[in-house]
Image (cartoon, rainbow, N blue to C red):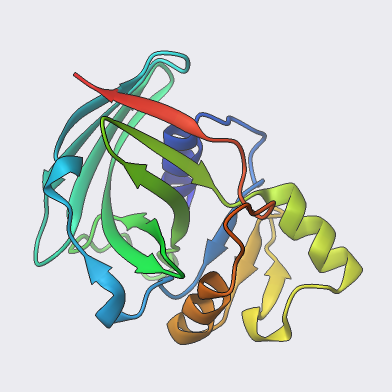
Length: 183
C-alpha cells in the first residue's frame, strides 16, 4: 500500500504524513465504465512539485504509470473510467507481480481532467476522516481506519461507483488539483 500511497500523493502534489490516504480494497470502477484516452500517453511534469510521470499503454485497457519524484520512484497500473460525467484514474500496484501473502493490493483514486494539460486531484483524507468521525459517510462504503490511520473503503466496486456517480461537480471529498504539462 505504500507504493499506492506515494504515487497518489506524488501525482496529486500533496505530500502529507504517512498513513493519511484513502484507499479501497476493491477497484473504484465497474467494467462498463472503463475508457481509454490516447492523450494521456506520454511524459508529464508537475514543475511545482518536481514530479515526472510517464504514462504508457498497459495490458488490456490499462496504463502503466512510472513516476519519478526527488524522494522516490515507482510504477503503477491505472485504469481510466467515467462516472457521473467525470473521469477518474484508479491506481494500484503493478499487476502481475506477487508481493507476497501478507500484502493486499489497494486502490487509490484520482479525479482527472485530460487536455493540453492533465489535472489530478486525490480523495481528501481529512474530509473522509471527518465524515467517518461524524458518521456521515454512507454505510455502503464500509469505511474503517487501518492500523496506520489510513482510511480503508471495503465496499464493492458497484457501491464505490454508485457513490462516485452521485458526487457533485464541485466536491470537497477531493483535494487540491495538481497540473501536469506534457514534455
